[in-house]
Structures are given as C-alpha cells and as structure tokens.
Image 1: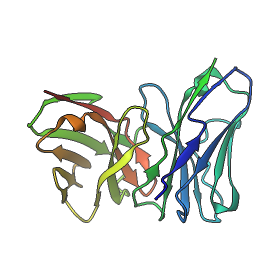
Image 2: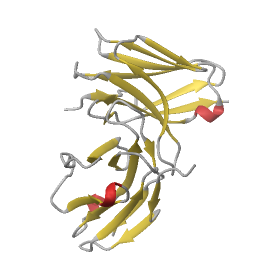
Image 3: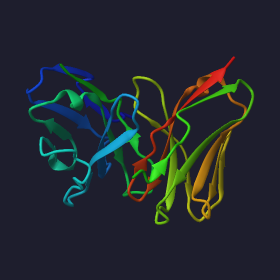
Length: 114
Length: 108
C-alpha cells in the first residue's frame, strides 16, 4: 500500500519568500505529525494533528510557521518570510493511533533558503 | 532541556559483533519507547518498541532493554550487518519526543 508522501522533495527558495510543503498521510491514519531535522540535529517536533481535535502547535518555532490539515487527510506546512535558519529537512509522519504507536514517515522535503 | 538523550553521536562496530545503542530519558511519565532507523535521504522507519510495563522486547536481531529505575533504554543488534549502518533515533511517548540520534557504522 501507499506510504506517506511529501512534496516537493527539494525546495530552494530565496530569503523572505513564503513556501508550502505538502504531506499526504497513509489513508485512514488519524494522527499526523510534522518534524524538522536541521543539519546535525535530531528530529524537532513542530505540530501534531489528531482527528478533529485542535492541533498541538507547541513545537512551532515562530509565528511564521503554520499548518493545516484539510478533511482530516492532506496537510500543508507553510513557512512565511523564510529565513536561512529555516533550512532543514521537513518530515511528515502519520499514525493510526494516538501516541504510543509507531509513526510512518514520509521521505521528507529538503528546504534550502538562500 | 532534552527529555530524551542519546549521548553518543556515533558508534563504529565490527561486522558480526554486537551493537549497543543507548538512550536516557528524564520524564518518568513516558510510557512507551520506540527506536527508529534512518538512512540518508529517507524518512525514519520504525524498528522496535517497548512498553514501560516490560523490561525487554526482542524481534529477530534487535532487542530493546528498558531500565525504568535508571530511566535508560538500549537497543542491541546482534550480529551487526553492513545494512545496519544508519542513524538510530530513540523516541518516547506519549509526547513523541526524539533523541538526536546515533550514527551507527558497521565496519567490514
């Protein structure tokens, strides 16, 4: 079956521009997570969606970051006025259950801000 | 303040020997622990997990040990194989917090 997909796989943007990153989770998975991995760092939690509940935005690093999940499926992570420190691999994961169960990760989007 | 710590950024092990990857945590409310493996340019893949009510879980060459009193878990891979070379992340639930990872390099 299809796994988690993310697009684009690579994105190069100029400082100050807005970017949108897309995640298609595994069908039927109720939980969706966004992480980022900066060079030499671990996985930094950004935001978590669970069903129709209000998302957990506690990991978003600034108000330039926002995310939506439409219809309980596809999610879009938007970064406004990108900065060079936003350069990282952005990973999306979905899970069939709430926390305590394994997550299935997409391949990530490598964002480079020049 | 890191709640999940992997203090060894890298580890080299001879092929055929045992690889031991360590993870420490600070929050006693964590009730489930997971290990993920990540190859370059790919997303992490789930490897093995353990509930806090257990102290050991085994799956083929992979065994995870949990010492709750020490707030420590470890992943044992035996025998180590070249395909095991990857970055290994420890994660803890319910908040799903990841460690920074340990890069395992299996030497021929």
